[in-house]
Length: 224
Image 1 (cartoon, one colour):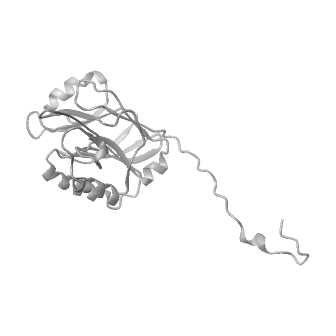
Image 2: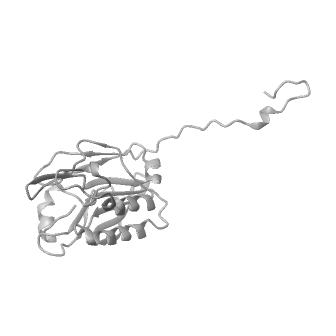
Image 3: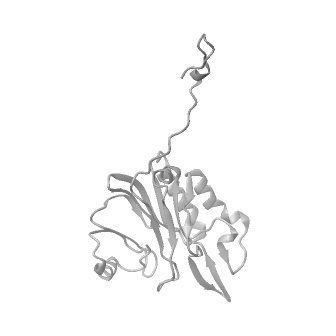
């Protein structure tokens, strides 16, 4: 999550939650940026890389592991593509299960925005390209996906800035994965909760036809 506050303030504010571990990225300037990731003791979280726009991790729980990137998209559209290029570097040779979640500060099409001036079709290209080149898909969701609301001049604008994506390996490994857009609580963003079952689902056996069954005995009967 974006903190917008000094690290010591963040730690003292969230101390009541009792999380055993955390990783913070300090804000670039007061009131802007800053990231915080908290996790429980039963999780093994290895922070692989962190910067002002994301915290990239590998998570192990109950014998299962996957990559998870907690992302804060660049608010400045002119700089946003640079962040997507950094994410593409993460994706190189990353065929293991991978989940991305956070405030992307961007949308993939006009249906993800209500109010304000219309955006051109070309303005959606960068995020669409990121998804295509990194094998990323939106998780199925519940609730109202227009996760951000704000006033722009005389218009109330709502957008799906927050989302959860995963690559095909993660979706195959955790087929129960879903996210839920919750109600606004003291912020202009809805919290997004991701749920998935760490138990390995048994895949159904594939039906295979043995071509040897086409062969016949001299009696003319097929093999049994």
